[in-house]
Amino acid sequence: MGAAENLTRDAITREFMAAKAARAPLVYWSIIPGPGSAGLCDFVACAGGEFFGIEAKASREDGGKPPTAQQLRTIESIINAEGVALVVNDEVSFEVLHRCLMTATNYTWTRPAWRSDAVLKRRQPPPMR
Image 1 (cartoon, rainbow, N blue to C red):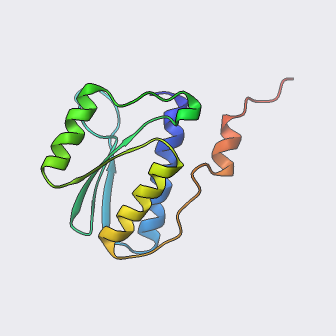
Image 2: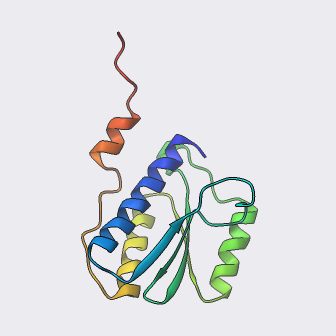
């Protein structure tokens, strides 16, 4: 997992935190990559009785790659089980996630920024001495 993908994971985490702050009926887990996690989505959630599998990918402008064959099989399995599976890799797909969660929970909250100022500052290299 590269630094660019971490930016997407950060945005998704901020979206879940905003939903929880609004007291939306939501439970989520961030899957930590490691042995045995192959084939799992980066985030799984239950929102308003709906199962969500969310794959975080680096944005296209950051050189992100499409989901692997195994990730696509997992996404297909979730959809076949009538769950919601999303690949979040840009601001448009981030907005889709936001709207899906609000629809499932019947709650509203302000969508966090796709790229927060704090995140963008972390991307900049430290000053030269």
